[in-house]
Length: 386
Image (cartoon, helix red, strand yellow):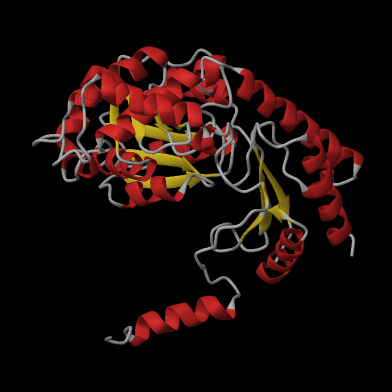
């Protein structure tokens, strides 16, 4: 085989030197504290069987979509599922994308126009950053969860000679941050954007299935669905399947169908995936898994406190809890020791997170039990005190 170009070899070498090289992990039988399957839906036999029933009821036996949705791939389950999602999430319309990455790429590369301004939380997900990078709009980050810093940056932008009233301003945040597990002051952001006629965009990837009635998300839980320009929900976390949806106005959906390149130029999702999404959402009606998850979150926070670990954990009421252990080498070593004890806890290294903010990321699930939570934190306490 042809060798990798030397420039690329050097990039890999630099990452090796920083002890930050990424490798595909092997499967394991450890206690799961790393996956995004918060409610256990990815392993649900009930959802698996219901998916098959939906396909049988619709007399669908296709393995693939056969093309992009604008050509041959817009099978009937798309219409049904988008209508279902719009109703569930109190939205005027819903447009399904192949993944959360595709949704963020498509939205941010096409909606903000040349001369417009995007302000995004500094801890926003990489897929949003990549979408913004493809946009012709100007973009600026603001300090994590700081409306004060956001306002300061906007004052500076508005004072610029090139600023005019025709400039559209988009404010971007997540309702639960994937690498910290914390939440923004959503009501403050809503008030701020309403007052100034800015467009608020919220990624709810880690809130769906976790917060709100029947797992509807933080935006709906707080009653803001009518005043937010766009919500981006993904199905690969608590819903345990694949794909994503952008919720907004009918005009926004029409625009995205015409201009979002990651929607236009890709083969649609197969019918089986759409049926799985419907089956997973229907399962949210049984809130027992959500209640178990919240009980485990409460137990985890209590045990963190009793073991005097509070100072190294980021405050979180979500399913994501992060323990800051600075340095790639150190956090990898402690993660390895915890894994040897039978717990699947993953280290998050720089450059994924800022240097000095490396961490162990604990993901909680409805199927974890109190003994597992106490045991993994007991092991952590032993190793961080060494």
